[in-house]
Image 1 (cartoon, one colour):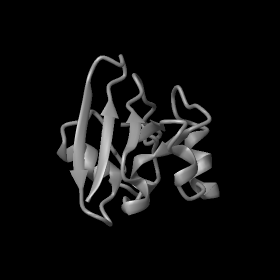
Image 2: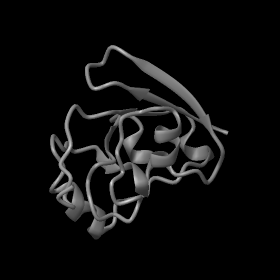
Image 3: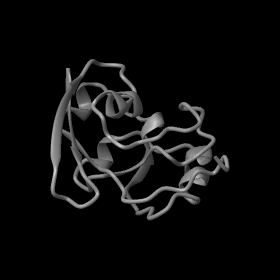
Image 4: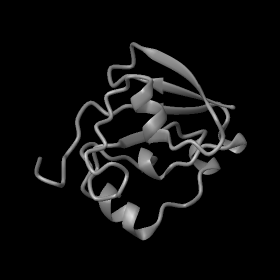
Length: 111
């Protein structure tokens, strides 16, 4: 199991969730009731699953692909440690991962 901590956009709420190895962060977040839309259903065609990974955890992630970086360029409030939750596969190396939910998002699919 991999423990993930979600921090709300206002920083007031924290939610810890245990997820099985191989789970996709977007699906874990949605199952936990986090406000990540994931309009494109994980096809990397929008930025509605944009999260901000805690700076201490960011180096643990594999590098973002060029396609993911292109989508992140369109994400609202993107930072140096932004990623798309649909592209993060959880495993033991990510145990203790902390992600912040942005306060806004852009839906690049126009929905």
